[in-house]
Amino acid sequence: IEKHLDKLTPLLHEHPVYSPRRCLKTITVVTPSVQNPGAQKPSGMPNSKLKPIFQDKFAKFSKNIALCEDARKCPPEQVVRFLIEWVNRRNYSIGGVRTLVLWISEVHENIDEQPL
Image 1 (cartoon, helix red, strand yellow):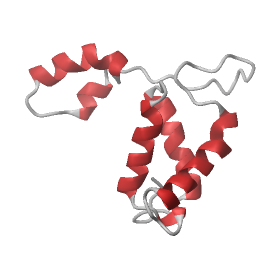
Image 2 (cartoon, helix red, strand yellow; image 1 turned 60 degrees about the vertical axis):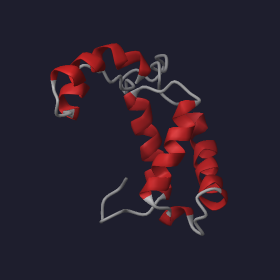
Image 3 (cartoon, helix red, strand yellow; image 1 turned 30 degrees about the vertical axis):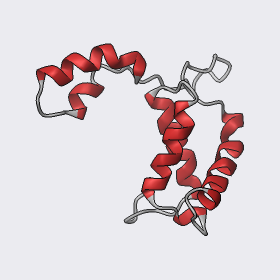
Image 4 (tube, one colour; image 1 turned 180 degrees about the vertical axis):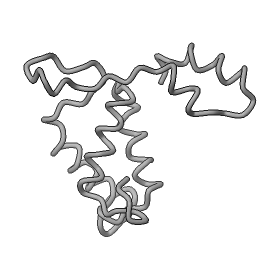
């Protein structure tokens, strides 16, 4: 988000009511190319080899810090807290954060019958 702050700040000043739709129009989300698997990984996207490590770190965070007995039932606020802490130490794009949320959704129960 820091990379896009120069584009987001004027939008927030022009519109007293925050509009995520307007803000997201200025951000280009890079998605991996399925047609060309040999292509380089887009900038800001997590490496797929990181997935089991990431899910393990989430399980440890849930148990030790969020004090959840079962990581699958960890409250959404704690999931967001984990993601904030994880992303603060790395440089992920919006698409990269979406990938991380999908990885957590694979090990987390649905909330109101919807994945995270």
